[in-house]
Image (cartoon, rainbow, N blue to C red; front, top):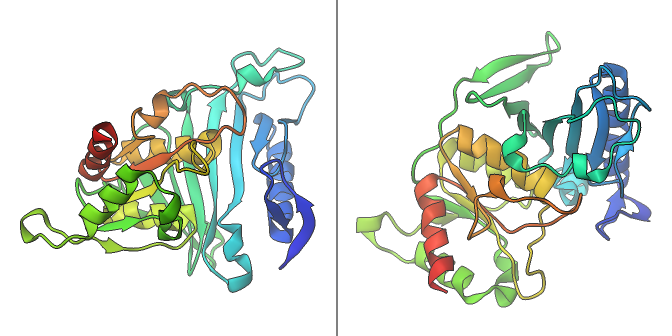
Amino acid sequence: LGLTGKTNVQGEAVRKLDEFANSVFLSAMEYSQLVCEIVSEEMEGAARLSRSCKGRKYSLLIDPLDGSSNIDINGTVGTIFSIHRQRDEMMDESPDEDLLQKGSAQVAAGYVMYGPSTILVYTSGDGVNGFTLDPGIGEFVLSHENIRMLARGKTYATNVGNRANWFPWTQQFVDYLSEADALTGRPYSLRYVGSLVADFHRTLLEGGVYLYPGDKKKSNGKLRLLYECAPLAMVAEQAGGRASNGTERILDIQPTELHQRSPLIIGSAEDVALAERFVQAA
């Protein structure tokens, strides 16, 4: 528990468990001999695990411990991951450009949620499945087969504490969801954990919309495109949902930086489309 006294490349305070989680994934991926490079929220640049990538076909982009502000209160945290194929495994020095691939190029993506139970949810481009860790046998067991997201939900998740900094469209959209109207199934209920993994997992299973938009202080939002937005966008779309920055499909965005940020609206297809209409009308 507690802080290390360091700050990461994002300018955020690093917690001891952040640092530990990052080291665990580095060690595990080096041992696997499948991954050549890792991009992590906790590291400024990519970590190359082998001078030659021959035989190491993949790059891993990861948020080792999402929601780490919840650690000291025993709240839900998780890991978000994105897997890309190395474009040239013979290169001795892989430039960042090799890692800056669109989300549509992911070969697999998902997350692990460490809550009352430990759940792995992932897709390799052919639907979404969830696996729950059975401590008795030390294995993940298929518990959520072929997950499909509702076309429309009844909840929304966002940090209302940022309302004073929201752009008008965000305020108008949240106000709309909060109004009572039986014909359109409103009001929606607010559900917000403050851990992207936990908020998205609920949205995946129960429908609705999660949004962390750009605002007056952070026009590009807070979340990182490569290892938070893109992997969850792949999961959402494979489950029949939708993910957008408000004007563009998340998986179509061409990244230009390893730690690039992006606004995120993700969830049930109809709810995300509704949010996009509010953006377009602004």
